[in-house]
Length: 270
Image (cartoon, rainbow, N blue to C red; front, side, top):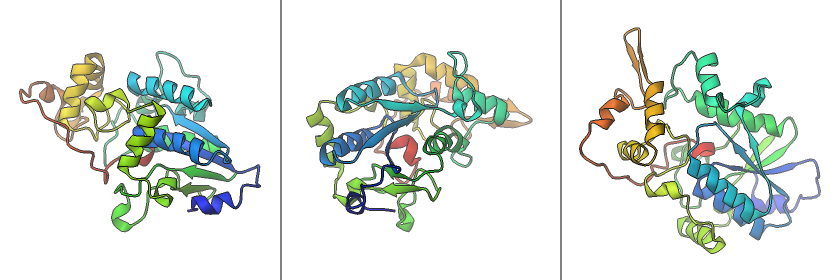
């Protein structure tokens, strides 16, 4: 781990990459804007690992961010790991689900989606050279790994060094909102009915978020249902022990609780 002050003292290396990994969420977007404004001397690259299953609102948000930054957001995906071209009828998630994982859905206990669709493409983009990975963990935040006082990283590779500018500079939630508002970017529109970025079928979603998906994107809700299956006496669903058809039959409209920052994946939800 490096601090932003330590990096500023060693900017003479042209071979080291400086990368902000974008999720389509508020924190990584704010970090991209913050780095551009606060540390213009650092030549930052912006990378988005596309699962092919993001919300349309996410793609639109990234396009607006790209315009605001005046810099290209580099888009990578897991098909590139196998030198397979992405087609409209073949997205990275479907390929890995059916060809590599025999149709078994990812879950909190088996997060192959994070590893294969987000982390591996990021590592492939970095390669074997050194890179500083700028991560939007706030000074007031409690995410995965924080119980042990260990901030999350995007990659465990020793050549990819995590940096936490918001922690170093004591940037908090209120500051994130100010950065986004003052830039004119604002929040992604999906925050009206969803607490986090990530795939439309993310298994970390609350019941109220699944209900929000059905209300705002009924075609994606139906698509998520089709991924579920019953095989060899076992049911494979997005929600532990509950198929989405049961969610449809719930008459109560659930609210969205504040994001539990101890759950989730840094590369997906920041």
